[in-house]
Length: 314
Image 1 (cartoon, rainbow, N blue to C red):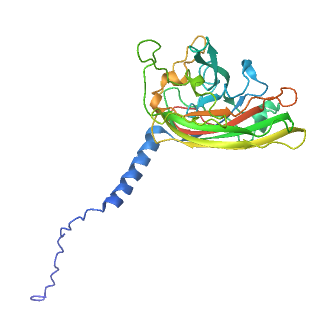
Image 2 (cartoon, rainbow, N blue to C red):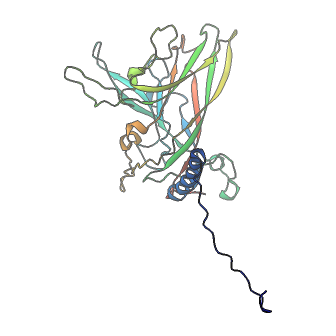
Image 3 (cartoon, rainbow, N blue to C red):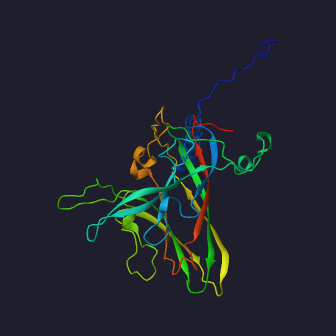
């Protein structure tokens, strides 16, 4: 106080040096920002539930060591997307004679929406099942998150003469890409699904070299045992689950669907082969007797989870 007057001292803003964050914290911050951006760009999480009809050997397919089944794990489309081409499960067919046998892939069946309430004949207001398909990925592209396939194997009739059976589950994707060629000095045809027949007999026990070429494929293998029975039995069921996650990457599929016929192009033709994850189920033995030990029947249902900003959701 000077001369009876009160003075106030102004507080000035002082400069505070901003300290750089540690690298680990910067990574966490950037990851959080990227995740939020991906949610805005790639859309919200959507789910679909599908099934495929493989029982009773459809389209002439009989499961065996020379007839494995194959499908693309990140092909989340089904027959509701297009009348053909999408959501296909393949098996190999062969032509020619040794030593010049050729192989090609043929459709067994296709994934379709799982709608249990509709199949039971319920009115729409009562369809409240959990595993029910409502969404479809956008044809322009989507970001797959993960898939979960439930596989049921039913030995409808079997006896002790069959012995143990093995199912080999291979999840694989290309390590190298080759242009398909059938002539010249060094012909190569390694691309899936048409080269599926070259992977026959992978599950045959006793083979010393039944492994996929590690210079061509990244592979993850799992074995499922169907144990022998000690007396004649019916409907011996084995269930297992296949789970697969995918990198955080948007797949620009740009699927072509004919507006007149509804036919769509196959998923593997619309995709970069390096981004496709394949799953193959191989059987270790043929049936010793189709009457007493018929080929096991397969049923498969799947859950697919993805992001996209243009698909349809419940």
